[in-house]
Length: 344
Image 1: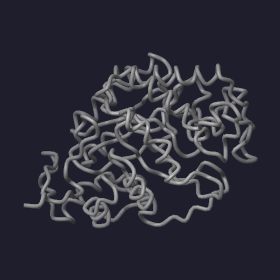
Image 2: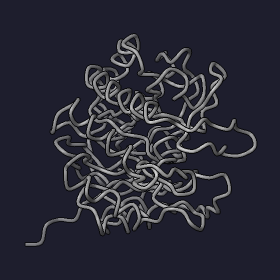
Image 3: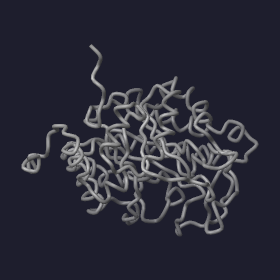
């Protein structure tokens, strides 16, 4: 007997973590924190999507170093123990609503917009565009400090109780800048081996949390510009790290490494990149890109184009998209007991 094909509501394992379905809420900045702290907005925002049936919620980009790592001054932070209590309340609230929750840890690099610092840092002194400051080229000491800060963030995330940690290596932020030949013009080992900083972050992160804790990376698998990275480039960079079990899954995005990338968006436009990367990798690959149609999302999973889908803007519009999708697809799933009448 052939095994039954997966659908949108089949459980998924990422490392040792089991998620109740294949619906992932990707990190989306809320620009609502004050001095990096969780507040009522974050708890209401994330728990609403948990009630709405999302399997895995990933908290927005959270800075690992004071301000220099922040995209804006209203982002969440994890660079100090003082943030643990607020993040713990958020995690507990989401767990109470029967969803899993991860955190994306980040350094903004040359796309840092914080007004609380004078200098921003990047692999090379090239501004993102004329609206951004020109960054200072990082020294090896700066790189070591950053890698250590990511390791500390890993430790704090485990103390908080997150189920998964995602490293932001996409969208033209610091690690993404190192990975791309369009933004990394270094001639040292961090330029000749562009994946080196990500490898160091993963090694220190794995040491910090142990071999069984789920680690995910988010990448811009295609730079949308001549001379930039392709999916094959990423497969070559990531395969040795996968073989060492330094990460357990990949959140596949594209673009935003440069300001002039020629992106052609349409519903599901990131899925072909996830499908291509899956041909090389043996870990779950999550794909998406303006997805809103539940039948399309289900077909993506059933056809194996991606192991799970990330639903971003549609979940901002409709926190209960997952519950509604189950009804649309005729798939019986448990509703929150308070909402059981809505199944009829």
